[in-house]
Length: 270
Image (cartoon, rainbow, N blue to C red; front, side, top):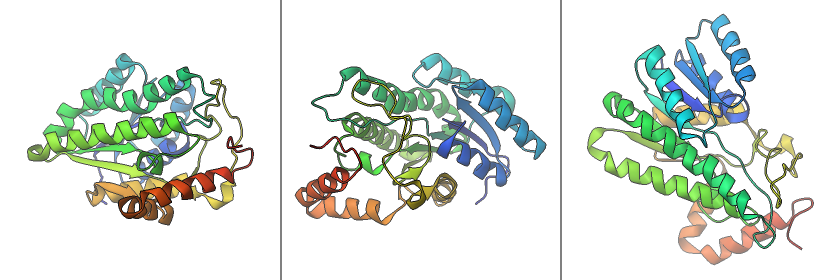
């Protein structure tokens, strides 16, 4: 994996998969540009990276705000002259039946997961075109097949996928690499901050952390996927099986997903 001196912009960089991505690319000699809402956490990570001789910059970023996303990309250009790799990782989830959910929850997920990707891509694209770089959307198996109890999450990840696939096609002759990365359930804080039906945070994960892939392993696989110019990165057997079953037996996949999600502790399915 040849990332030395490449400028890598990562959103949602202060925790979970985003933080793991920061350290993964730093270990390969990349120049890191971090975006996240918590300036304090960004400062702490930047100080640690600088102590390891990593070149780093950051900008406090709420990806639902177009101006923040533009500032993040401008930070990369000001400090390092451009962008080679954009990783749209910032995201939130939800857990509620559509019958019961406040529609503002779905709007919030679209703002973060979809529009955050759109805003960052819009301002990074000219530099990525110039450098023949990569755009990565951290999606989910929920962006491949609808995940019950996660209508807003699935919708936002499907939207991200459609957007990025179209960007890929539009840039076929400009050598822009676009990858959709689909981790399975990952040991990260995204589930703890998942929104419930009324928009409050879930606060606890219904799943066993020790049985999930670590954020560090996800980050390593994303880096390897970029180096191999993969289009779709499915990281677990369940994800690969979902993509295969969807082609030949989508009704069966519906039932498998329903039964699987119904087994969660405190499942919203009655």
